[in-house]
Structure formats: C-alpha cells, structure tokens
Length: 192
Image (cartoon, rainbow, N blue to C red; front, top):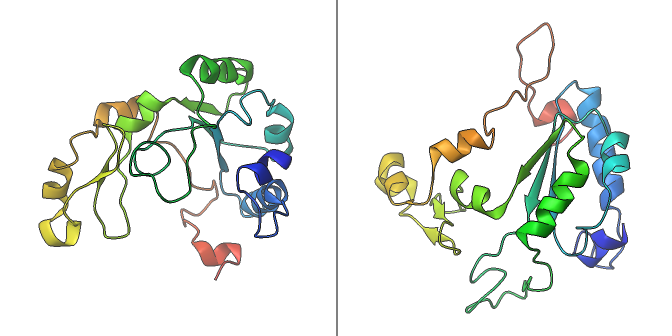
C-alpha cells in the first residue's frame, strides 16, 4: 500500500486504500460472475515486488495485464511537460520489465505488454473523440471523429498496427458465463 500512496493512488490526505478498493471491486465482479481483468503498470517503485499473493488473493483473475511504464512526450516526460506529472524517476528498462515478467511467468493469467507492443497496438480516443497516435512518443491527435468520420480519423492515426493488436491478444473472452447471454451493465454492479 505504501507504493500505491507514493505513486498517487491515494486520497488528498495521502491515505492509501487502493489495494482494499481493488479487493472490494474484485469481490463485486466475482459475485456477479464477470471475468476479472487486472491492470498493473510496472515501474521503478514496484519492479522488484512479488505480485503472486495479491493476484491469487483476488482470484480468479481471467487476465492480468502487466504494462511497462510508458513515457509520453509532453505528458509525463520531455520538453513541454508542464502538468506536474514528470515520471523520469519511474521509468524502467526493457530488461527490468522482462525480469519482472519472468518472475511471474508461472501465472496463467499474465499478459505482459512492453512499450513497443503498447505504442502500436492500441486505438486511444480523447475527450474530443480524436484518435491519439502514440507511435512516436507523443500523443498526436487526429481530426475529431464526428467531424471527419471514423475511417478518415483512423487514416490519420499512422501508428496503429492491427496485427500487433491481435498478437497481444487484444480480443479475449470477457463476458460472464451464465445460461443467459445477457451482458451486465454498470447498474448490475450497483454503480449509478
């Protein structure tokens, strides 16, 4: 929990309960029969941690996505970074990330994604419905989808690689397994 507070996973008084919140959310997901997916960003503050007990404790986990912390020019690194989110002390090498993955390789739910995989295999939309091309280290926006249409906006997102999306197993089974084929919505979880 100390690491969570250190990297900003806490309230304004720096009280941490991120781990507790994840455990409570996992319990709700399991209670409703939905397949649980957990995301972890591996960075300098947690690269040496062992997550076996934590992941097993909230299981079953269908997918544990493990990301290498990604630098984005103007957002968390480099010139123009003015939002107070400088992450220079959090970056890790590919070798460090690979060592983390190797230590957790025995976990069937593990789905690792290094920076090269992430930069080309995601389509990201911002609040103005612009695709953000991160292939060159910064978020370069397309024209807004409502103004130019999906296909034209996609053509402006030169960094997206659909084959890389499939290689990273971007398509997976996520629905709950029940006799009915009803997919739950947020109200099924008591979220309003």
